[in-house]
Length: 245
Image (cartoon, rainbow, N blue to C red; front, top):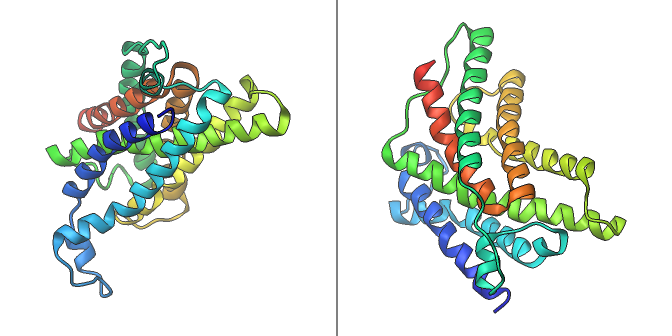
């Protein structure tokens, strides 16, 4: 049960984000594609979350198996193993996420002011379901994939190769690498809403990567749940910034 209990607990929690994503997706764009299969909406929604589910499961498995070997922590994982653990403080991750989201919104406004005279595509506030999907899918599923999974794997690989747990310099470099991959992962969604030239691509990667660094540092220094809280809070911060500025 050392592996099974935390693994399946995280999968169950992550499923909430996948369900919210499936419910919030607008299928009209997919159905308009010439190669779109003639399937019921429920099947299309299920197919859309199949790949994220596989990636989430893989990331969760890596995190549960390897994180404690390199000093990376999760309160839930520890508690389900019967180990003593203290839930990370909520204040700093939430405030950092909110402020980070607002600052990224300001940076985004500045970019479009320079790039196209202030026109910013896709800045309408999300619906309730879209907002719920952004918070739960981003804050839980993406963190299980990228921080608990990929970042943990990189820390473990560095430990196996060097014989030492990554210190400040190497650890920060690994956090940045995963954050850049996080930014790259947002390119397909951006391409669906606007023409994707070099400037837009760089903007998308860098703005998301800045937040990815924040989430990664919280995971590294304060635990997975701290990174998740920062990620969740950054979405309301972003929406607030875009609506105010």
